[in-house]
Length: 264
Image (tube, rainbow, N blue to C red; front, side, top):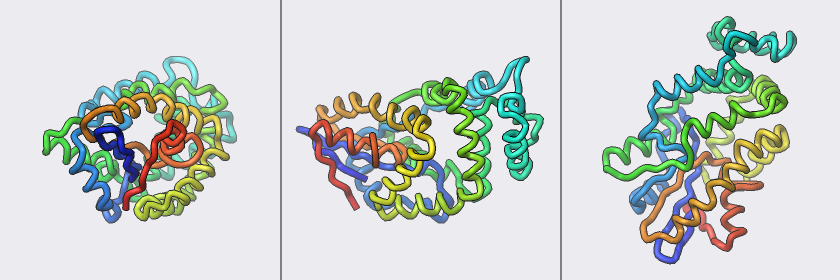
């Protein structure tokens, strides 16, 4: 959690873990203080207005092959066999996942693996804060729509979609340790560790990182700068890895002359 002082207000930058286990779900004290001091929450997407049925319909329309094409054809025999093994282990019918486009197959495997480890979006930072804000009648806004966010995956070049699948398959059995490291660094506010984790992600898949993290940060910055000219306080909640490291929001705000103070 960081605070940036505007001329008449404060903008809090909060790093989120989108899914948490029940035993990890209690938010750090700085989150409670920033929430209480803010008039509006700003998230990657406005989760208060998110319609799960509309989201599911969009994904089925854009994330699946129509009459022609299949995942097995797109991936090739060796890569598809690896994915097939993981899908079966996680209880996903191979016939169903063969209709998925590569980006949707990779995202689905990640979600299923996290669920198998006990990670739950309802325990995640955003869902907790949305429930609190709705009860308190506090305004919630989003930087982008769900369609814009998922559209970035849907329009990834074929090579980057293949890379997304490969990275997912490589990391499936390391996910428990990796998420433990991420949650531990997040809870203790260890920005250096978080930046190191982000550096690993960048080095593994720079094209994916640029599209899904760095470019979005740049698009969000004008909105953040407008908030800093306002007269009410904002709490911005985005994935923790959007904040730190190369192209992170902390780096971008510093380049524009703002000083962010980390809160404990």
